[in-house]
Length: 305
Ligand SMILES: O=C(O)CCC(=O)C(=O)O
Image (cartoon, rainbow, N blue to C red; front, side):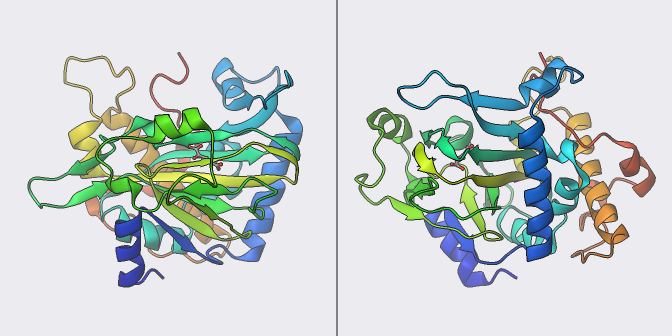
């Protein structure tokens, strides 16, 4: 479980590596389920929104469309739902995101074998408004991604590069770095090599990206993002008379919390360990019966339009 030193390292540097966070059996199940999604791809039977979940890109000098990510994977298999309630993940979430944590995003990023698509330097969601300084408590609530590695990430498979401490930069230099398209020569940048089952925490304001690969092996990483409810209430809610657009109404966060409860219940049902049976904050709990009924694919408002 995360120590105070690890929490401090994360706050200072914007990232933290936890080796061996996810056990080998769970990793193997996730690998199998992810591979099945890659092999099948989008189908005619899917809705337009579900087909859009499969995102493609290109590498330099080729017109071939290459799979680069699949959105909303919690709606694509129980193993991804159960992962949401993994005790090592939720312990880290609780300690770095805040007690009122809410799962806010789920996807898998893929570097296909042979040619893997670049993820240019960026801050997730575009930048410096992606945290909340709460005047009531004086606390800063970060938005954090929990990156679960299913394959080895190294030079050949296009490991992630990060600039430690860039979460504190007030001016966003990520677009300029993306334009230059360099990794190893970026001042302060480090490559974060990972093994299957390792978890990387990254603050969404950290500069990060990964180069395209040529002749490398498959590299798959699951990204689960969480934010504290105080952050969401202050930053993401539509005004009372406003259409949701890309904002997050109460029903949407309740739906996400219901998936979390379903994840805790599904994990316990197969005899896996959980950190707590329900959300530790009582007003963020969704009754088990209600949680069991919800669809586990919860796209963001605006995704299906
Ligand atoms: O896994 C990667 O290469 C980076 C993915 C990423 O940062 C993103 O999708 O926002």
